[in-house]
Amino acid sequence: FTGAYGTGDCDTGVRTTFDDSAPVRIAVAAPPYAGRFRPDGTLTNLNGLPLNGTWKLRVSDDFQQDSGQLLC
Image 1: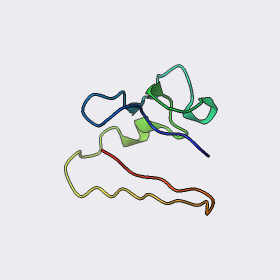
Image 2: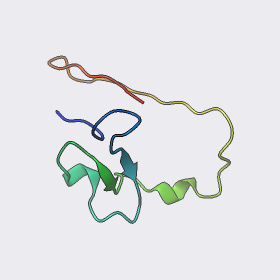
Image 3: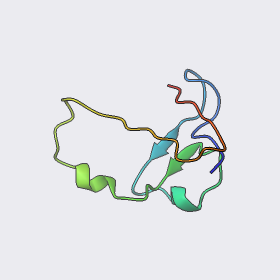
Image 4: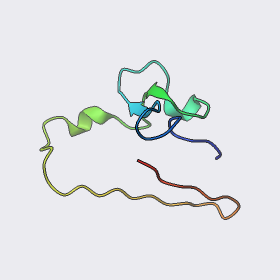
């Protein structure tokens, strides 16, 4: 996988937004993933869950031949 989620910097760039009703699935889109995309799973599974609390973001690089950065 090569590519980026969103374009530009954190303040003025175009971010990646996951939306169950987006016209294009992220799995078939091409980078950079700037705009709205349907996720691989369904976000509606999160409806009704509390927004406040402890959130965890897990990021992993499964490929030794490349490197990456998490910004914003």
